[in-house]
Length: 130
Image (cartoon, rainbow, N blue to C red):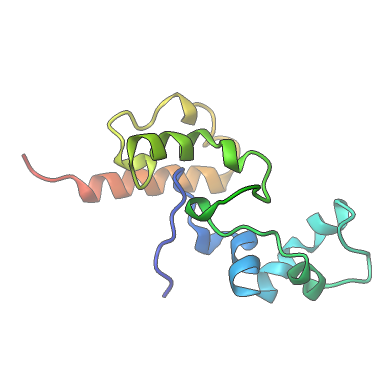
């Protein structure tokens, strides 16, 4: 079982195809990314998962970003910037969670919704009795 690799926003890197292709050269994840790579003109119609791995998305995880990141906006991610400034491991550790950055975010996709649920679970599990 993979250890939880958590982005500031609650996304689990183990569930991310970009991360798995970059860090593990995972062909199954690369296969799932084929339509997007083709739609972006990054690979040809006859190319397969191996071509995706060769052009790896270069996602090394939220906390390993140095310089430019594959995903537009990762370097300026509000979640990551805020957690870095407050020296938090993830947003679930913040007294202000969920904050304005989350407004409408979780409704954009099931993946984001699951990330927010994960943060609420982590928050509840880490509360200490006073």
